[in-house]
Amino acid sequence: MRDVKWGGLDCIVTGGSDERGGGDGPIVVLLHGFGAPGDDLVPLAHELDVPREVRFVFPAAPLALGRGMGEGRAWWMIDMERIERDMAAGRVRELAQDPPVGLAEARAQVDAMLEELGAQLGAGSPLVLGGFSQGAMLSCEVALRSDPERRPLAGLVLMSGTLLTPRQWTPLMPARKQVPLLISHGRQDQLLPFAHAQLLRDAWRAAGAQVEWIEFDGGHGIPAGVLDAAGRMIRKLAAGQASVRPAPAPSA
Image (tube, rainbow, N blue to C red; front, top):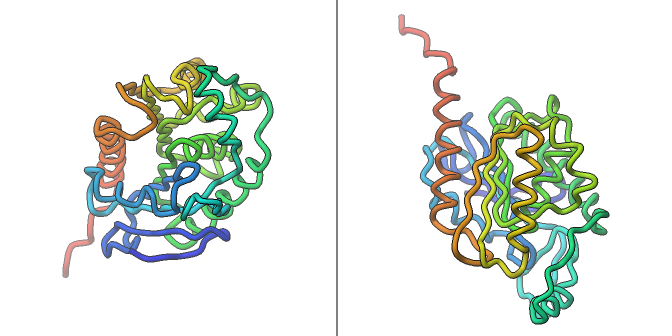
């Protein structure tokens, strides 16, 4: 495991042939959620059942929350007090029609991070992008706003996210319909309504994408069934990469 700074973001790199990102295996980039520390998802590198050659990158969001949030960080600011008031009153928040303030800046930073990551770890390696909650929303935004030819994706993992800006996202989805998607959500999620995750799933399917949808009893989290599905996606990718890798030259 090692610490790097790519695109201005502090990142933790692990896995691969040397546990420091070595080799040429698939790369999995996972973005943490709002209020979590930058290393929140790092344990997933060991919890996911994937081959050793898979490499993981865990970027830390750029905004430090402070104010009693400890090491919590954010990709863009969210009015948590309003969310808590809505939850207490039993109100379901409406889908946003306009991008939240700070989303474009966060996307630019992740784009820059991915550019430097490619230069350092190998631009030709299959890339899976994903995240949890706010990190899932940002992953979706990055995927939809980037050029599929310039930045091909081998998978998109959206855990407990939401359809953030349907007016902007929906027209962009057909360009990414070839990317395998895993979308998961808890039926009792009080932070991000389950119904909105279903809309995200339906929008991708309407665009022609193949979506593995996992719903579970529970709230805002990542249960074992989601990790199993993510592991299957990554193992399939690693197996496909191995099948096309050239055989070593015979010794003289």
